[in-house]
Amino acid sequence: MAQGSLDLIEAMRVIAEAAQPIKAGATIAAENGATAFQLMAIFDWATISQAEVYTKAANQKRMAGEAMGLLVERAENEPLSHPSVAPSQTTGNKR
Image (cartoon, rainbow, N blue to C red; front, side, top):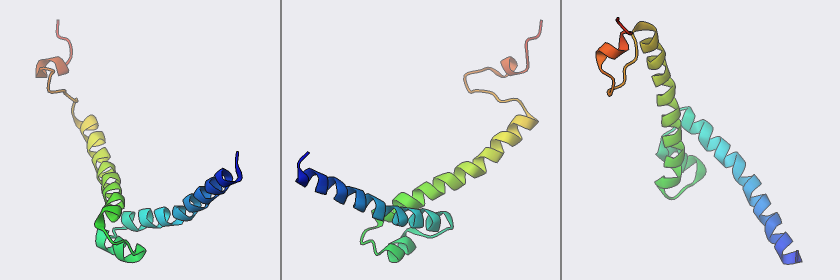
């Protein structure tokens, strides 16, 4: 490889490593309840789109965690049924 290519690769590596603390900080802040506007202030972002990446991911993680309890509760209390399965098919095979 030419020297210029190595310099570009090294520069890309340095940039990627520098971004990791920002990603980690934004993830932690969002998971702790920071709003998109708060993330914009913390990280000096000019647009809300970057902040929303982190707040949407944190909301998705939170909602999924809350919903998992609903799956377990339902599985323990009653049989699961699929909309395409008739209720009589979920109670077992009667002969």
